Length: 211
Image (tube, rainbow, N blue to C red; front, side):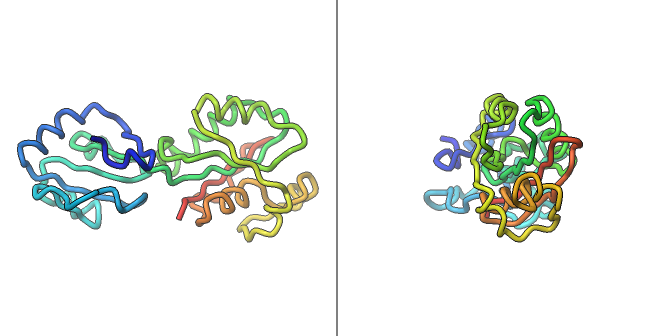
Protein backbone atom coordinates (compact mmCIF):
# COMPACT_ATOMS: atom_id res chain seq x y z
CA UNK A 1 0.00 0.00 0.00
CA UNK A 2 1.32 3.41 -0.87
CA UNK A 3 2.65 5.46 2.01
CA UNK A 4 1.15 8.89 2.51
CA UNK A 5 -1.94 8.06 0.48
CA UNK A 6 -4.31 9.50 3.09
CA UNK A 7 -2.45 12.84 2.85
CA UNK A 8 -2.75 12.97 -0.94
CA UNK A 9 0.97 12.35 -1.53
CA UNK A 10 1.93 11.39 -5.07
CA UNK A 11 4.85 9.39 -6.42
CA UNK A 12 7.03 11.48 -8.74
CA UNK A 13 7.81 8.62 -11.12
CA UNK A 14 6.65 5.06 -10.50
CA UNK A 15 9.21 3.31 -12.72
CA UNK A 16 11.24 2.10 -9.70
CA UNK A 17 8.34 0.97 -7.53
CA UNK A 18 8.44 -2.71 -8.52
CA UNK A 19 12.23 -2.96 -8.16
CA UNK A 20 12.33 -1.25 -4.76
CA UNK A 21 9.28 -3.15 -3.46
CA UNK A 22 11.16 -6.37 -4.26
CA UNK A 23 14.20 -5.13 -2.29
CA UNK A 24 11.85 -4.35 0.62
CA UNK A 25 10.38 -7.83 0.54
CA UNK A 26 13.87 -9.36 0.42
CA UNK A 27 14.83 -7.42 3.56
CA UNK A 28 17.51 -5.39 1.77
CA UNK A 29 18.51 -2.13 3.49
CA UNK A 30 16.30 0.79 2.53
CA UNK A 31 17.19 4.34 3.56
CA UNK A 32 14.54 7.02 4.17
CA UNK A 33 14.94 10.79 3.94
CA UNK A 34 12.11 13.24 4.59
CA UNK A 35 12.40 17.03 4.70
CA UNK A 36 8.76 18.13 4.34
CA UNK A 37 5.22 16.84 4.75
CA UNK A 38 3.30 14.96 7.39
CA UNK A 39 5.56 13.02 9.74
CA UNK A 40 3.07 10.43 10.98
CA UNK A 41 2.88 8.35 7.79
CA UNK A 42 4.16 5.15 9.28
CA UNK A 43 1.30 3.54 11.11
CA UNK A 44 3.38 1.18 13.20
CA UNK A 45 7.13 0.72 13.60
CA UNK A 46 9.15 0.96 10.41
CA UNK A 47 10.29 -2.42 9.06
CA UNK A 48 13.67 -3.56 10.47
CA UNK A 49 15.44 -3.21 7.13
CA UNK A 50 14.60 0.52 6.87
CA UNK A 51 16.37 3.41 8.49
CA UNK A 52 15.64 7.15 8.45
CA UNK A 53 18.50 9.60 7.85
CA UNK A 54 18.39 13.28 8.74
CA UNK A 55 20.25 14.54 5.69
CA UNK A 56 20.54 13.61 2.05
CA UNK A 57 24.33 13.34 2.46
CA UNK A 58 24.13 10.71 5.21
CA UNK A 59 21.49 8.81 3.23
CA UNK A 60 23.75 8.68 0.15
CA UNK A 61 26.76 7.61 2.23
CA UNK A 62 24.79 4.82 3.91
CA UNK A 63 24.86 1.18 2.77
CA UNK A 64 21.20 1.40 1.69
CA UNK A 65 20.36 -0.49 -1.50
CA UNK A 66 17.53 1.95 -2.30
CA UNK A 67 15.95 5.12 -0.99
CA UNK A 68 12.51 6.40 -0.08
CA UNK A 69 12.61 10.19 -0.33
CA UNK A 70 9.77 12.41 0.87
CA UNK A 71 10.39 15.93 -0.40
CA UNK A 72 9.13 18.78 -2.58
CA UNK A 73 12.58 19.33 -4.11
CA UNK A 74 13.90 18.16 -7.48
CA UNK A 75 16.85 15.72 -7.36
CA UNK A 76 19.60 14.63 -9.73
CA UNK A 77 19.32 11.49 -11.81
CA UNK A 78 22.11 9.84 -9.80
CA UNK A 79 19.86 9.88 -6.71
CA UNK A 80 16.65 9.12 -8.61
CA UNK A 81 17.82 5.89 -10.20
CA UNK A 82 17.67 4.11 -6.81
CA UNK A 83 14.74 5.99 -5.33
CA UNK A 84 11.02 6.25 -4.95
CA UNK A 85 10.25 9.95 -4.42
CA UNK A 86 7.01 10.86 -2.67
CA UNK A 87 5.55 14.33 -3.15
CA UNK A 88 3.63 15.78 -0.20
CA UNK A 89 1.34 18.70 -1.07
CA UNK A 90 3.44 21.40 0.57
CA UNK A 91 3.62 24.32 -1.88
CA UNK A 92 1.19 27.15 -2.47
CA UNK A 93 1.61 29.29 -5.58
CA UNK A 94 0.45 32.89 -5.33
CA UNK A 95 -0.47 34.51 -8.63
CA UNK A 96 -1.00 38.17 -9.48
CA UNK A 97 -2.39 38.69 -12.96
CA UNK A 98 -4.51 40.74 -15.33
CA UNK A 99 -7.96 39.87 -16.62
CA UNK A 100 -6.51 38.76 -19.96
CA UNK A 101 -3.40 36.84 -18.79
CA UNK A 102 -3.34 33.61 -20.81
CA UNK A 103 -3.28 30.07 -19.44
CA UNK A 104 -0.17 29.37 -21.56
CA UNK A 105 1.72 32.20 -19.91
CA UNK A 106 0.69 31.03 -16.43
CA UNK A 107 1.73 27.43 -17.11
CA UNK A 108 5.03 28.33 -18.79
CA UNK A 109 5.97 30.83 -16.09
CA UNK A 110 5.09 28.41 -13.29
CA UNK A 111 7.15 25.70 -14.97
CA UNK A 112 10.07 28.13 -15.28
CA UNK A 113 9.97 29.26 -11.64
CA UNK A 114 9.63 25.70 -10.28
CA UNK A 115 12.55 24.46 -12.40
CA UNK A 116 14.70 27.46 -11.45
CA UNK A 117 14.15 26.82 -7.73
CA UNK A 118 14.21 23.01 -8.10
CA UNK A 119 10.70 22.52 -6.72
CA UNK A 120 8.28 19.79 -7.80
CA UNK A 121 5.00 20.54 -9.55
CA UNK A 122 3.48 17.44 -7.90
CA UNK A 123 4.01 19.11 -4.51
CA UNK A 124 1.88 22.13 -5.42
CA UNK A 125 -1.26 21.98 -3.26
CA UNK A 126 -3.14 24.86 -4.91
CA UNK A 127 -2.96 28.15 -6.76
CA UNK A 128 -4.09 31.31 -4.96
CA UNK A 129 -4.99 34.78 -6.14
CA UNK A 130 -7.14 37.83 -5.46
CA UNK A 131 -10.89 37.72 -5.97
CA UNK A 132 -11.63 39.95 -8.96
CA UNK A 133 -15.05 41.20 -10.09
CA UNK A 134 -14.78 38.82 -13.05
CA UNK A 135 -12.87 35.55 -12.66
CA UNK A 136 -9.75 35.31 -14.82
CA UNK A 137 -10.37 32.72 -17.53
CA UNK A 138 -6.65 32.02 -18.04
CA UNK A 139 -6.20 31.15 -14.36
CA UNK A 140 -9.23 28.86 -14.29
CA UNK A 141 -8.04 27.05 -17.43
CA UNK A 142 -4.43 26.75 -16.25
CA UNK A 143 -5.61 25.27 -12.93
CA UNK A 144 -7.83 22.81 -14.78
CA UNK A 145 -4.95 21.70 -17.03
CA UNK A 146 -2.69 21.26 -13.97
CA UNK A 147 -5.49 19.55 -11.99
CA UNK A 148 -5.16 22.09 -9.20
CA UNK A 149 -7.77 24.09 -7.38
CA UNK A 150 -7.71 27.87 -7.06
CA UNK A 151 -8.32 29.67 -3.77
CA UNK A 152 -9.27 33.36 -3.82
CA UNK A 153 -8.88 36.06 -1.16
CA UNK A 154 -10.57 39.46 -0.95
CA UNK A 155 -8.20 42.41 -1.21
CA UNK A 156 -8.92 43.34 2.46
CA UNK A 157 -7.63 39.93 3.54
CA UNK A 158 -4.40 40.47 1.58
CA UNK A 159 -3.81 44.16 2.37
CA UNK A 160 -2.65 43.65 5.96
CA UNK A 161 -0.21 40.78 5.36
CA UNK A 162 3.48 41.53 5.84
CA UNK A 163 5.30 40.97 2.56
CA UNK A 164 8.86 41.62 1.37
CA UNK A 165 8.07 43.38 -1.91
CA UNK A 166 5.14 45.81 -1.70
CA UNK A 167 4.19 47.55 -4.95
CA UNK A 168 2.50 50.93 -5.24
CA UNK A 169 1.35 50.03 -8.72
CA UNK A 170 -0.36 46.84 -7.51
CA UNK A 171 -1.90 48.81 -4.66
CA UNK A 172 -3.31 51.39 -7.10
CA UNK A 173 -4.65 48.62 -9.34
CA UNK A 174 -5.83 45.98 -6.84
CA UNK A 175 -6.25 47.87 -3.56
CA UNK A 176 -3.53 45.86 -1.82
CA UNK A 177 0.28 46.28 -2.06
CA UNK A 178 0.70 42.61 -2.92
CA UNK A 179 -1.24 39.82 -4.55
CA UNK A 180 1.15 36.94 -5.27
CA UNK A 181 3.25 37.13 -2.08
CA UNK A 182 0.37 38.01 0.26
CA UNK A 183 -1.91 35.30 -1.17
CA UNK A 184 0.83 32.64 -0.94
CA UNK A 185 1.63 33.55 2.68
CA UNK A 186 -2.04 33.82 3.69
CA UNK A 187 -3.06 30.51 2.12
CA UNK A 188 -0.06 28.50 3.30
CA UNK A 189 0.08 29.84 6.85
CA UNK A 190 3.81 29.51 6.29
CA UNK A 191 6.77 31.43 4.92
CA UNK A 192 7.71 32.53 1.42
CA UNK A 193 10.05 30.14 -0.31
CA UNK A 194 10.28 32.11 -3.55
CA UNK A 195 9.76 35.86 -3.49
CA UNK A 196 7.68 37.54 -6.15
CA UNK A 197 9.01 37.06 -9.64
CA UNK A 198 7.65 39.30 -12.39
CA UNK A 199 6.74 38.01 -15.83
CA UNK A 200 5.95 41.36 -17.51
CA UNK A 201 3.60 42.83 -18.30
CA UNK A 202 0.79 40.85 -16.72
CA UNK A 203 1.92 38.16 -14.27
CA UNK A 204 3.70 37.74 -10.93
CA UNK A 205 4.31 34.46 -9.10
CA UNK A 206 5.44 33.76 -5.53
CA UNK A 207 5.67 30.43 -3.71
CA UNK A 208 5.20 29.65 0.00
CA UNK A 209 5.51 26.39 1.91
CA UNK A 210 2.69 25.13 4.12
CA UNK A 211 3.90 24.88 7.71
